[in-house]
Length: 248
Image (cartoon, rainbow, N blue to C red; front, side, top):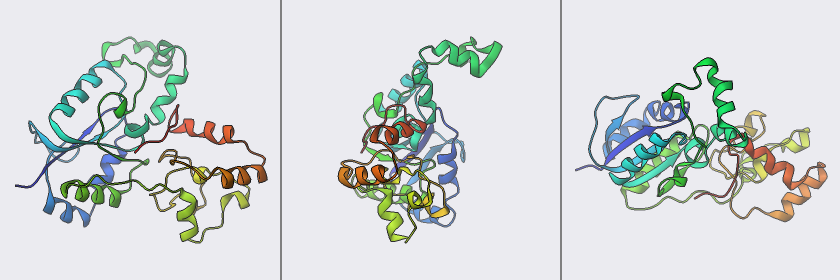
C-alpha cells in the first residue's frame, strides 16, 4: 500500500499548492510512489490519517491552531512548505503593529469585527506543532518538493542546503548584483532555489530564510564595500519574516 499524502492550506496565497498542481510530467513519478488522499485545490477526497501531511500557510487564528493540531495528531510526518509555513511569511508583518485591531480595521474596513475575520499574532507552523521537515521558498521549488516526498517515503528526513544563494550564483556564473549597485540578500539566504531571482537580475529577497552559520568574514567584507551594516541586511528579512531565524 502506498503512503498516504495530504496537502493543507492556512493563511496564504496558495501559490505553493499551485506549484504542486503544476508539476506536469513530474506528477507521474509522484503518484507512482504515494497516494494523494487530500488536496483541496485538485481533488475532493478526504482521509482520517496521513503518512505525510504538507502544510502551506501561516497560522493566524485560534481556530487555525486547533485545526493544525488535529492534522498533526493524524499525521505520521508533517512538512511545512513555503515561506508562510516555515517562517510566518509576509503575513507576519502584522505582528510589528502593536494593535491587531488597527490591522483588522485597515484591511477589512467596516467589516473588521465580523467573527470570521478575527485575527491573532501570526505564527509559523512550528510555533504551534512539531515539524518534521521544511521546504522554504515563495513559492516552493517544485522539484524540491518531489525530492522531499521521495526522501520521506524512503524513511529519510531531507536536509536543506546549508550554504547561501551566492554559491548557486557562482555555479551559474552570474555577475554579483552588488557589483551592479543592487542590494541582494543572497549572501545570507539559504540556497536551494538555484539562484532564480539573481539569475534574472532581481535581488534575492530572502524568501528561503537565513542560512545557518553564514560566513561572517565574507559577509562583513561585502557589506563594508557597499556601505551596509549587518543590521540593515537582517532588517530586510522582515519582508518574509518579522523575526528571521534559522530553520531546518
